Length: 572
Image (tube, rainbow, N blue to C red; front, side, top):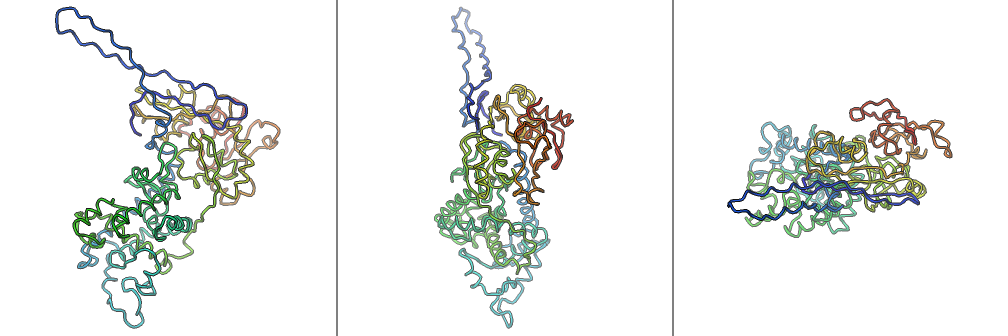
């Protein structure tokens, strides 16, 4: 988290107020008084009339936007888990590339063939075997590509299948074999499955932005079409923008959202970025290389006389291009070749789990709202809401008007259920700047909220790791307003797969009557649930929820998916 120089700020944002409820005045904690500076001792014996020190002035409090603009805060734990999983894929691939030295396959390509792969490379023999074949097609194999015998037509026919440049040389072939290798193959199978969800949507966006549609394969090698992918270079999203470049192309990043993870917004930003790179470099291969290395490095190489990507990649070492950039362009071409001919390269249809694009509608949410409440109104799981809105970083929408996506087929159900839920739901937030001596327990006591809620809202896994100057968002329910309880999901939505991912709550007989307030309810824990989020959902105190369920320490208690939790709304 970034360090700041401001004093404590308390900001309350009231959301989803029920009919007749009024906003009360915002409570504000006392600010820290600056210590008065001691006057220096007099240097002369005569008495001096010294003006009294000026009273310490209060520091100017930051605005609401300053507090919530912190893009460095960790994501909410359930979302952080998605990031960790998809980021692990990128790291596995990176390590496999380094181990195989496949990125160096293009170095000295005119003379050394596969030598750039290293003696211990697991794919060296396969590439050398391909390079050792007679380059002149003969007999039955006439018309094929010698380096890619899996393709049943010639190079010109292959290139005509794409609207981007496609070359076939040892560097490209090395990446084809790399993707086929045992350590990488499973990842590529997963990418092929995701491609069915995003490929056509991305192609449409690229076409609208004036780019070749097959530029889509850049997203494939950047992230494997993973919205939550995060690299060690701090690039994020399916098109892997670093923070500064993302902001320069209009992708908002703050405490609440990271639009680098929004598949459509990031695709349009990437298209504009690539179009500019193409204008600067004059070639698509160099534009792709610039996307990876930065335009400055490519333009510098051009000034030295290198106008062709392959000529740049042919220079040993890092004098012109880094190893990662040398492998970037052939990796893109290899991914494009395999994807359009995946069965020829041994990727069977029956092993690819095809994902599907979800048609959605955007609905207006006026202020901060728990995603569980939105999911309940739409009759879907919270995971489905997160999946459609991967840019969200918290378990709620931002404390400002926000358009959130819901499945199009559930739009009518949402419209019918939302007014009643909105009237019963309000969220309040306070901003707090950590001071010396603060602890999560003390902060929680000061605001009268559970410590677990502070930890989850700020993505903190360890309560002891607080830094002075860190900004925290304190979630608290508005006075006198209870958060609506989760209702059972509609029967039409309870498919076998949905129940495994997010089982519907189980109600007792006493909870079945809509007219009477239930004495208690039994909730089945869903993926992403925590004790604090359940307490917030039902408008009860965390300590009461723990007492009803015999939980002694909510911080150390492990909540298992499928476990039953007793909730008594309206009772302490």
